[in-house]
Image (cartoon, rainbow, N blue to C red; front, top):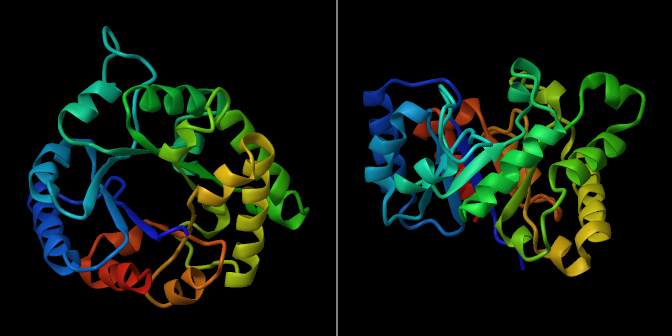
Length: 250
């Protein structure tokens, strides 16, 4: 039986005081709420937030990780560094990094393997553009991103992988597929996982929905049998909009 997982991706938002205040508020409001929660602040606030969420039911996530272990890689942050300050999971393959920083499936795969090698969990983001949607190739796009993004990952390592399906055309637009449409794609993703890793692993893997999930549509989306939680962007930046989504997941 898969439990729900709600993750907040703060992206490049917040200042230090705001990050600390929000983390404290979430810890207080979610302390008695079941299921799994994660927040991913910007890198510069990870250490401060780590002190607040330590030993709570909120995991600390990061928004990226370097391919390299260490050395002369200006501006990069390694998996070992993240783990050293209490990070438990990393968000990889987000469409914004694919688009703005030209990360392809091969690069995403290297980062997945780097994170796993340091016992970090991974939230692997996949999803299609609107041009893919209108010509009916959404399932093929997602299949390829999974196959290439998870190359070299074992069924045992899949225990540390969460898939986040984010239709790119829905991110930050306020437009979402219907819950039933999203559920169909989630089911297709699970079939792809079953072909690669076996049905048991596919059944155990959490598949989140992302892309303008908010307090108004979360309950209907989370009620779908194949949707195991959400990767939340804008709505994760305030406790008043994030906590209700977390409570719908119970």
